[in-house]
Length: 296
Image (cartoon, rainbow, N blue to C red):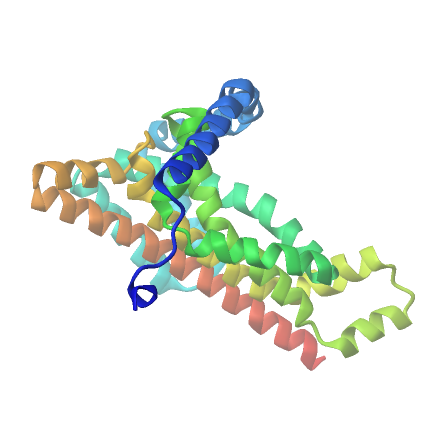
């Protein structure tokens, strides 16, 4: 009855040799191409440093007014605007302004990077079934893989610092915008597509002037989820050098500082609520606009 309890496994020597070969192969790859990857990601590093300096050196009243103005332009909801202002003022009042600005800079850069990569992939997936079959399992792996696992190859390849942390955040936050861009384009009404074809639209014109505008509310839902997933990686990314609200939380865990962890945790929640409400309200406005267009 041993076959019921003893699962057949590779012998220890073979397993150790296999693991060693994979590890050595990856180390050799990092030694050979590590510098090339650092050069390739240099523009991202420059963008990240610029965004961080902009957020931390600009006087706080200007930042506060700018964020409230963006909240108003996106949502046209006075409650969202006031809530954003109160949350940010409370964060500053409790001495977490600089860390919050660094975190917002990281989230903005990570989200923009994810959108630049994710939206074109989502568009290509919506146009190609074979590509969708290939990319979908990869997205499944990306969404189910524990976030800490992303840090291992990134750190081995690029070391400790802002860029490795940012790349880990982007990888973790990328799947929702890809999936929802693909879904949004495929859900566009076939009658609308036929009407565009009847007017002699090319494939590019149909995509840019019909499918993407109508898919925009769904794409915005993907943007919202990407922002939320990026924020959920704040503490994890701080383990490899990303500055912001995650580092005080790590310090609080290591030293059992309850209030430090609690306050910075609430600051992360506050930012998440601001981003979430603003992006959701903008998505709702786009949805209403689409309904008006369909009505006509």
